[in-house]
Length: 248
Image 1 (cartoon, helix red, strand yellow):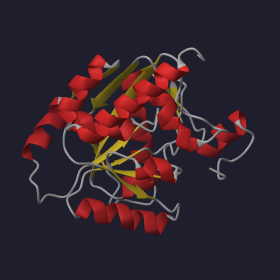
Image 2 (cartoon, one colour; image 1 turned 180 degrees about the vertical axis):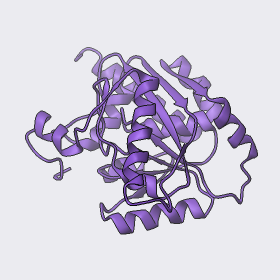
Image 3 (cartoon, helix red, strand yellow; image 1 turned 90 degrees about the vertical axis):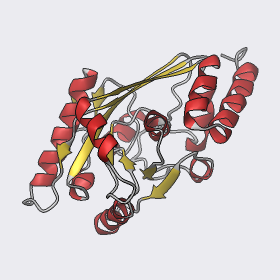
Image 4 (cartoon, one colour; image 1 turned 60 degrees about the vertical axis):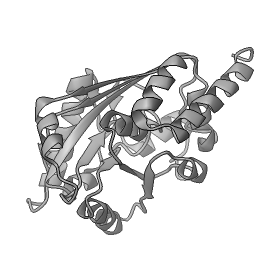
């Protein structure tokens, strides 16, 4: 690992320049030469909706599992269209250098719901990671039901990530270093699957948002061969770092 560090830092710098300067399709081609590969799979229903969507339509809401901080970026590359990502505990450094627009949530249910509705109402596509934190293991943490209240239609996105040296996620270290370590990996393979839409809980009864959130979690887990759990973000941090993660 220490022998690789100087080469890894140079590789990370080159990849970062490509991310910031090249359009999505060109960037994907260049990144392949530098060990980063993306495989995109779209369901027929998703492809039809994407073809019909007009610029003035209400934005599409994507809900994905959370493997690394680059999940929204690779979803953006898979779509090839502008995208906004909502964040909870993303460091200010990562937000400042993000190649896509980010919106920081407050963890206040009413304010966050209004914020997401505003982005979607303006025609912007939005991606949210309902687990609230990254998870390296082959299971899904409990999905927060907030996203199920802001759209009549939700597209689950199943994300897979394979790295060869560094996870690029930490529970007890400096979060701003996560993107650096991720980009230092000799090889990275990402898989993004756009699944069939799930009807949202807008205008439904009080329990509908939980039903929708659980259904989206189930569809993503089924696509990945993962297990659904009721573990929360706090459970993860208590198990791995002995804290609730709020200091991040």
